[in-house]
Image (tube, rainbow, N blue to C red; front, side, top):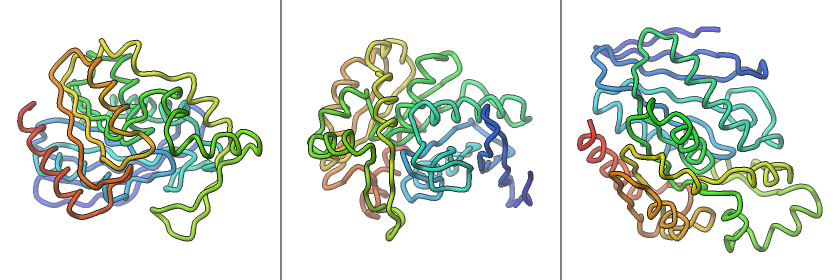
Length: 269
């Protein structure tokens, strides 16, 4: 299913729905630059969506540097794709990323090697892809990334909730991105997440890597990011954003992050 293409100068935006390997619709938005200097895939985190302010901030830094950008809603989240949030897993997020990239490979605007950016569960998904297919990835930015399922269980935020989540089978919390929305997630998400760990094959991440995390992040805290950072073999940066939580919403934080991205992109073009 295709939507109207919006054009402006050398740029064209299109929204389409593609099917993933499980025959579910994925909403994809492509901002195509006719004189593109590169291609980037930008991925949201657990329960997120492509219109979130931080996701748009990441993408805008690339658009302003004349990239073609691809944003999408995974299945099993609160965007435009199919599926229920309660069924979300790291596996389904990673597979959707892989399916979107495979779809892109047959498009006329596809360029390789491409850049990958992801937030939180999108971060570990993009990093897993880069570990598995390092020759396809020019640069990687797993922001506030999940590093492993095991580390996720060790955070202060998790410790108070894990027992109840496991006992009842549900994690219930109000959405901060969509106030009034109550999110319910099955314990199966954590069981699935435990299968994933970036550290054993972090040596494959030889491309430039950018890590950013808030100093008040209690989901993927700075100490987790530093463990990953120390394992990275190549050109790497880590930035800790003062007074920022896991999901970046404050305009000041977003402006700082955009500046960091702009510099990183220009340095690695």
